[in-house]
Length: 541
Image 1 (cartoon, helix red, strand yellow):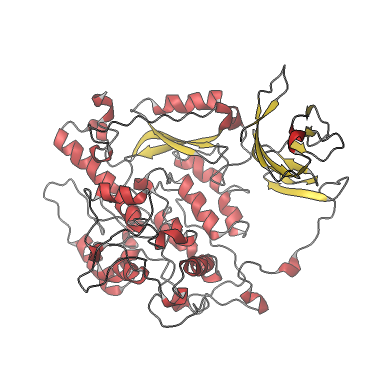
Image 2 (image 1 turned 120 degrees about the vertical axis):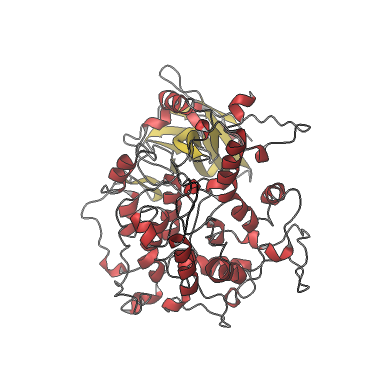
């Protein structure tokens, strides 16, 4: 009904009345891996459902319904009771909406933060975990995962990037609006001189945000479905060519120096997806005033004209010692203690008040024009992530501890060139065997409860890893076994029709992908299985 949809779904995102669309997605409760409470339009009205097969959905509800749906999931979905793993790298029982509960979880012994500080997970992985914990999602362009600009060298003629020179990198302790002294002074003057005759808008440094639906769509405009998203946001046509994303160098200069209305950061695709830099669909993106037609994104010299090389070097830079030693400073600005309050003012990091959660309740606005304007502002200009840390974020332990800013990128000893492996000589073997196997090792899995291993011709079934799928028996059968006892309560005798199995993998608890001498790859789905009956297996494709 319109009375329920209007406050929730902005008018700009709806399909035209002449083209109604009804989408329906079904997933079994057994296939639900996790459910997290989420915000939508800065309101606590959504849940995000993560499935075992990799799919995930953002579901938005009218006010008062979300919590009931969430509790229903917790009651019915069996896998939600397992707190050993989480897509956020954190105990799934940690609340992402109650600050005290989240903080107590983050500073725990096995928290995702401590794992990062001790070098157990990469910088990219940790940033993705923080984005997930803060409610950022690939399903919501208004709250898309945000990543930092890490480099400042996009103009030099050098063919190689010097990751030992601090001048190669941006200042991670300052927001994008404070990367140059000139811009910093202008933004500080705006804040100091701010006056609102109506008293409704507090002082702020930035009236635009570092992440919004338009920023994400402009970065990914060369790829579908983001091309259509960009066109919809632009009213059905591409923007002026001079305003389109066409050069990494120009994008950096605009966000860090030249444009007072531009303080945007990056998105995760800058570190793993070369396709968005290429105009593989040959879209006509227009011609700039200087006569240059837009096509592929122009890359810095150190990328050697290759999008894959740009991604490789950019990812390498993200994981280097300098960024590892300073990334916590950027986390303080986006997710931590300098996100809001007096420390945000001191750090020149205050945004328009409508960017922050809790500043407006769209259900309390009775004026239809003001309601539409507020929803449009939140929808189009961006949203501040949920604050995760109240205290300064700890620094990551790297090969050598930097002293001030003298040479933070340098590491002592010959291990400097080993960007991802430090002090291997300090590794010592376990005093006792983790598990004694009956034959050669076939698979090793690291979980929260320890390291698990099985013999060859066996694979562990996620997410609990309490069972194994095994093959290679004389009768060509396959078996489901208990990991601890190795007993086989279930035997499958129908899979031999495709010849002896040579390999298999289990992406989730219900699916087996296997291949063998028949040179055919088969996908089997396990069904049923309960207290009174054993599971069966059927060919899915």
